Image 1 (cartoon, helix red, strand yellow):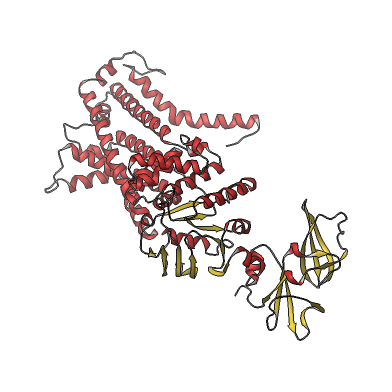
Image 2 (tube, chains in turn blue, yellow):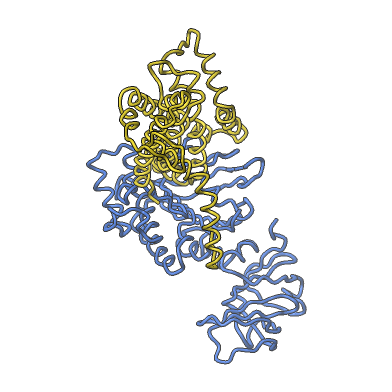
Length: 353
Length: 265
């Protein structure tokens, strides 16, 4: 599968989608570079699937344009866009064998018969399903059906691959396997741009070159996984990508203060009221820089880690700690700390608009 | 229904038999019994004969059976094509428009079939659409009467069809006509065959509209049965009825065989 795949990116130019006057996607501006994996991450109802459907051509933007590889496709019907798409429920044609499913797009596009066999075999080979060509979809497990759906989308050699929550129907173990599989496919097909819709931050962090965080029909942040994780732009991004402790702090002449405590934070400090963001696994137990103390309200043992919910001045601080030999008991007073490098200050008021 | 106690299960069976046997099974058994009899004055029929069947399977009766079968096949095929087409077209309409379509197609069922028969008779007795006196007027009437059922069952199946299939097909580059032919119709096949069977059975038994329309050279079997009983030949009529019933059931069985092969899930 090399050579003849066109390098194609995706560009949203202030795309707005509304159903019956209800805006579900609000002037989205986003560019997916050719060969890039872009994850659209957000809770349900955030507009991420609508954005994907606008690329596929199943919803018509009320305003704005969609470009594929520099070509305006806003007015093209889905079958003329040349995209591969994989959806959550796979949508394999139940009345066709696996190989007929994979050949469907090629036959529909009138690819010469002699060529179809080779390309079907190639696509099934890539997804490890070569041995299952004669089966019907109902005779396959969920993970196998997913592989066939991917093979079917790849067989038409799309420049752009749209994946709509492709792993959410699989159980946890299969999911991490498929995640590795998708990463391998992308290494083998570096020229295919992938738009990956998910509500699972682990999938987005693992797979994506860049993540676009969406909430309530709007794009909230866009950046590399590292940028979003280490230095989130707002509270929503901080809490949705990776989970975060968010503490209200005041910024004044004496520096950053949380209640009566003074905290050291390296990095830029905003002008006034702010929110301090620190990741739970970067909070330590015991004495250290930036110590805060509170009462243990809840303790969860998760095998490799202990998760402590500590109440500090009415605020909840979560700490993920390496498994403790002698964990504190419910109601104990404990001291927590975190390094000045590990905390980020966000401007307050960026909260959910 | 899930009934756990043994006594209750017996009671349910008993209730079923009490209701089912006299209402549904016995009348059919009586017809079967009468078709082999020359006389029925006691509890059971008497004077066993197969003579009624001898006349019921040749000559005029055989002609009528062929007429009925041809009419039913033609009407079901036409109804299926028209009903499916209309249902597919309606599925693409807005909800309010779709409701109007549905109402229009249910009309021939809501209106008594005698009225439908009369309407067709009046409408097609004058040029330019002079069909009166030909077999086509019977086939037309049957088509009008059964299309409602075809339309209804296909549109119900369409609304249950997951749009993900056609969208997946479209994203793979398939034009709407190709999607219809290779994806949507094959997925609808089980409901299409069910609709065909229903239309066929209804057409085989249609009498009231047919009575007003049939020309002498196109007499369907139900008309013959009615004529026989009307002149008092109950036993000969019963034999004809059994023939009609058997032919219909055989055809439905054949359709159901196709159907089991067509249902993939």
